Amino acid sequence: MDENLPQNCFFCNVVAGDVGVRKVYEDQVSIAVLDSQPASLGHILLVPKQHFTVMQQIEDETLAKLFVTAKKLSHALLRTLKGEGTSIFIANGTVAGQKTPHVLVHIIPRKEGDGIGLQIPKNKADPQSLEQTRQSVAKKYAEMFGSHETGTEGKSVTEGGSDSQDDHPTHVKSSDGEVMEFSKIKRNDWGTRG
Amino acid sequence: MACFECNLVEKGSAIAKEKHASAFLHVLPATIGHTIVIPTRHYPILEGVPDEAFENLAPLTKKISQVLFDALECQGTNILINNGTGAGQDSSHFMIHVLPRREGDGLHFGWRPQSFPEAYLNQFEEALKTTLQESAKVEQHHAVEALKTLKETESTRTYQIHHLRRIP
Image 1: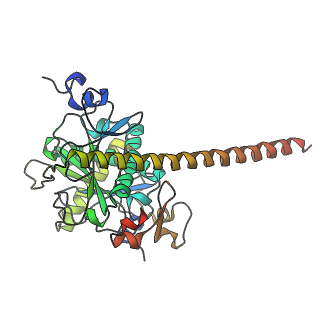
Image 2 (image 1 turned 135 degrees about the horizontal axis):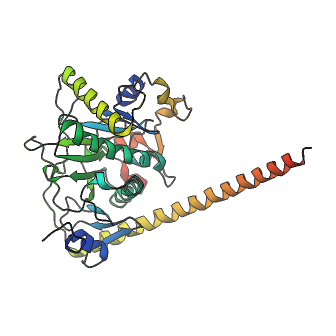
Image 3 (image 1 turned 45 degrees about the horizontal axis):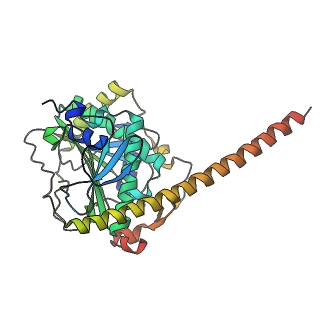
């Protein structure tokens, strides 16, 4: 059975409404359901309505919408669970742990010591080979998408014309206007924001 | 004092740059070619990144993923955001990790599925939907306000144009 055909793809059937799921959100480009095999309570699968195998196939505009929706869902999870964090995870390719032929965005509520295997190991790298990798990736990027200025970019830091301490705010404003204090977040104090 | 990632932006060692986003190689890579995509401005967590900037991070993340496939011959990529200290975020600058994956690279992302009583899940589902509806209402309110401001600006502009026309 060819799972890449929409009629055979489990998540295309989920999108079509042919599978019983706990749907929590829907817009023009995506639906979000509670994962039936969750890593933690509230684990959401954000599913693009169109069938894409990997993220690279998604058009920019749709992908931007998916990202913003993922942010919205992450925020809603934090508020509902009074959580300490979320992980947003995409697997592109079998070696990356992809298990379905329909690309998915996982949004997983997290708390310290939850045992969820999404920690990113840090390895010391030889500066020379790091620089080599940087150059070959930057070169390929320039080939594929046109170059960008690689010179000194001091100006770009204060993009938006701000050179005040605002570049490192201790308070951040979320998209729905709620103000959060970073120091509070550091203390895992999400709960007080209700 | 600027944070580590802000310093990277300042040093100009970016692999790629968009209007609001830059990509750098991670200096302590999980796998060869481990790249971070960051908003050029400093935002500590996802909730603080404005939608406009986050939308800009999406295509750059995608492009980086494509480039890693081609430049480093990886066979897959993981996109991972660990948002908040509870998720293991240890940088004060919000970032998206793009991790090139290869057979036998020793990385294992995964989790053991949990199960919860149906009644508990029903309750949670309702609570989550309520939160989402509340956010939608707030967003709608903001959209209406933004539209009002736009209309006001437009009427001022029209006034200015009329005003200009009156100048002989």
